[in-house]
Image (cartoon, rainbow, N blue to C red; front, side, top):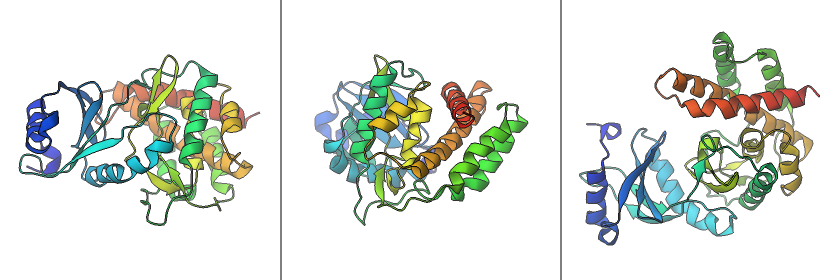
Length: 305
């Protein structure tokens, strides 16, 4: 049985806790969510157990969070899942796992932002706090935060697939947003801390506004435009300008152009993942489609002003 084939059950999680963290083993336990890389189990009211299960890269991503989130979390104005305990690989489960704080809220792909101004201010404050120069030994990302041009081949393939499936009304307009972003001057500032995966399933909402950010597995350093793209994906119409006004330091025109490129790429991915979910194909998530389509519409409309 390979690592990715290990069946994670409540009994297994309970046994792991009894063996390595017995003071937590009697807490109520229930499945919270299954993501791309990890399973999340709710542990009592204030903790969660995260175990890698679907990808071989998940181990390194989990250990990265365990190392760096306790360093970053104290300065962040929104709750994040702060690691509390580390689980070592063992015979029943030969992979590392962690216990983190539980962050309440609903994923934004299921509970979209409705209080636009409050959400824009909350997201801007969070990214202003996160986007600080990182030390030389900070983790390197999986290409995120680097030059957009590195993704041009993948973007072209996704654009062609979406157009072939009839999922986007104006492929040329989508391509124009991307081409403008790729042509923008590159980031010349210091390598800043990035979340690097701010799609709606990784941002939590409550009462219509943003209340937490989860899944820092892609935490890395680089160009802040990678994260600033989130304004187009997460916030309602006519809200991006408020976000960019609140974010500090104010991004220059080149950074705003690159952010639009990251956003259009993520929107295109979300549309394809959403369509796969509607049709029950592996890896599909139906809830990703609506926010991605809305983001693409916003990006094209603002480009045509």
